[in-house]
Image (cartoon, rainbow, N blue to C red; front, side):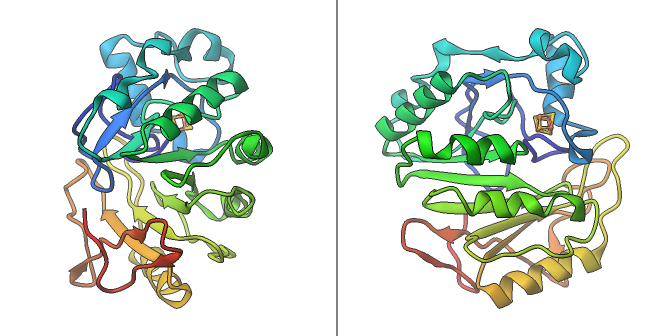
Length: 264
Ligand code: SF4
C-alpha cells in the first residue's frame, strides 16, 4: 500500500530482496487494487502492473474485478525461505481489498503463523475492513499491522488500528501530503514517513516531517524517515535536519526504541 508513491514496491511476485528501506522481502498472495484516497494517486504498484501487463485496466473501483487476483499458488512461499526476514505482505495490493474474501485472508494469517521464523508487515488503507475482520483472525506475535495516513483527512485510520490486537502497530505516512493534525500516537509502536517520488511527485514539507518526528519522540514511538522523494526515490536523500532516522520498533518487547534503535 504505500511505499514508493502510494503502494509500495517492486515486484508482482515474491521477492527475496526489496528496494524498500524498512523491510527485507515482499510476498504478494494478492495482486491488483483500486484507489481509495489521495495517497493512491501515483500508486507505484499500479504503474508496475501496467508496465508488466499484470493487470490491464486503470485501478479504479469499476475495474477492480479485472485487476485484483488471488494468487493461491504463492500462499506457501514464505515457508520456503529459511533465513528469518522481515516480509512486507502485499506490496502490490491491499490485503483488505473488498474483493479479497475473508477465508483467503484467514489463510494468509495461517501461513504467517506457520512461517514463524519471519516477521510479517501488513499495510492497508482499508482501515474499516481491517478493524471489522480483526476479531475473526488469530494474531500471531510475528505479524505487524499498519495503516497508511497521507494527510489530516485520514488520521482516523490510527483509531481503527488501535482496535487491532497486533504485536506491533505502525503508521506509514508516505507519501506525506500534508500535516497530520490530530494524529493520536497512543498505542502506536512505529511511524514511517516519506515524501513522494516519481513522475508528478507532490512536495513534502520539512515542517510536516518535523512535527511527526517530534510527536514520535514525545510519545516514545519509533520514527523512520524513509526519503524526501523527488524525481527518483533517492533524489533528496533521507536526512532530516542533518541526520538519518532509522528507528525500528522493538518487536514483541512491548517497548519502543528511540535514539539507539535497531537498524535494518
Ligand atoms: S490502496 Fe491500492 S491503489 Fe492505493 S496505494 Fe495501496 S495498492 Fe495502490
